[in-house]
Amino acid sequence: MSIQSNTQGVFTAAALQAAVAENVIQLAGAASTRQVQPASLDLTLGERAWRVRASFLPGATRNVSDCLSGRLFMHELNLREGAVLERGCVYLVELRERLQLPQDVSAFANPKSSTGRIDVFVRLVTDQGTAFEQVPAGYHGKLYAEISPKTFSILARAGSSLNQLRLKRGQVLLDDADLATRHAATPLVSHTGRIAQGLRLTVQLSGAEGDVIGYRARRHAGLIDVDQIGALDPADYWEPIFARADPHLILDPDEFYILASKEWLRIPPDLAAEMVAIDPLVGEFRAHYAGFFDPGFGWEGQDDAGSRAVLEVRGHDAPFVLEDGQLVARLVYERLCGTPEKLYGQDMASNYQGQGLKLSKHFMPWQG
Image (cartoon, rainbow, N blue to C red):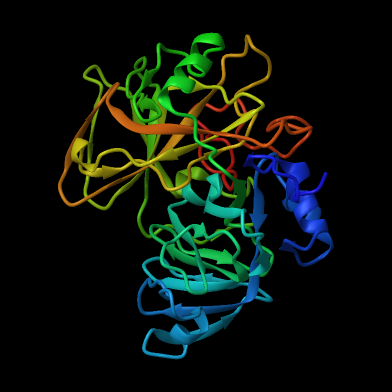
């Protein structure tokens, strides 16, 4: 296929591969074919990184390099052999990919699931950018990742992948009426489904005595190598949270938790979904960092139960009581430009298909 067609929607793997072939997306290295997912592209870190004093946006008249030559710059790192990115610090890393978008194609990004689950805040930055995570239609230029580890320091290197990119043409979001029709035909969640500016999700805090219903991050834990899978003992990094007779959890300010949705989700083959922010007035917490669900997530047939959404929760300024079944997030669904040949979980390294409550891929299964 060619991306020159007028097909509307989020690009599937075939469209992304066509974009690579037509030099719309410029990749680096022979391993680039592994970057293409059913409806997204894994972005990879380059060799150059900078420690900066604060997060920033270049603004409409400046490039990122203009900002790095001024008061924000602290020192430069070389990621060729790997470098430690310390928690509590802000870094900017040049990505290996570049874009030459047509005038009717835009892009948007989000952290990968494994990135959010270790509390690493990652946002895409572009030259002349006025908003994080968004790439305007017709953009030609470099891409950068702002990286700020919040709880754990990480070891990253050139080629590591912490965020992903989607390309789109036209209007892609399903409105509530379309979403209700799709849910009535083939349920998208295991419960009735509350639809209001997307599909609403609630938190699972109930369970039998001894059940683990969440994890709380340990402060001052060891280093996490972002490229090592199943290498770490979770007990060194996490404190389990057990179900209780009165199912609630008090979120402590500036603490990080892994919880799960009460609902089981199913993303149909012709749609993708993104978890987005809800009204901040519902509580003193943030419910996610990474929120993209590829087509096929939780979908292994129309009778399949689905997969839970894992929630990366951080308390804000005041302690806050989170109750079982409380509204914590919402999903918006996006039309694809077609149906991918391979879905999430099919002949792919899909770490979270069929998941319940699950830590990131860096950790071994919990023992005991």
